[in-house]
Image (cartoon, rainbow, N blue to C red; front, side):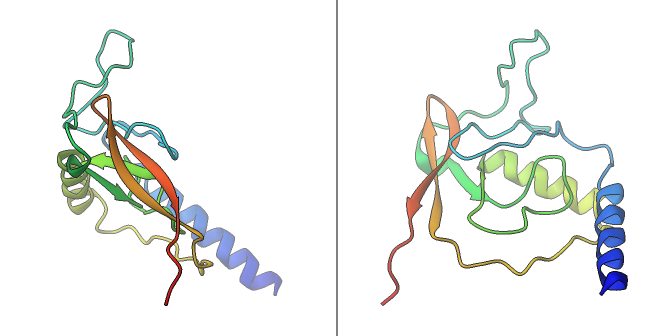
Length: 137
C-alpha cells in the first residue's frame, strides 16, 4: 500500500513538472468568474487587469470546459469550473497541441456531479453558472 501511494505521488509530481512550459497567461478561474486570458486575450499591460482579448456578446460566445489556461492537464472532476470565449478555448487547444504532446495527465475516479456548469456572458466576460443537475428518468 505504501508503494502504490508513493508511486501515485511521484506520478503526480512528474505531471506537474511536465506542465511548466511556456504557456498562455496561467490563471485559475473559479465558478462564476470571468474566464482567464490566453494568447488571444492577454491582460492589459497597464496593471488594470482588463482583458484585451475577445469579449462575449451572448451566452453562445462562451463555452464551459475542464481545460485550464496555461496547463496541459484538465481539471480532474466535473462539474467544470472554467468558462472561455470560444476563440480563447481554440487558442488554448492549439497551444496544448504544440506544447503538451509528451505530457501524461493524472486520471481520477470521480463521483457523479450534483450540479452542471453553464456558460454565461455577463458584461462582456464569460462566466460559469452552476445549476442543479436534472433528474435522470
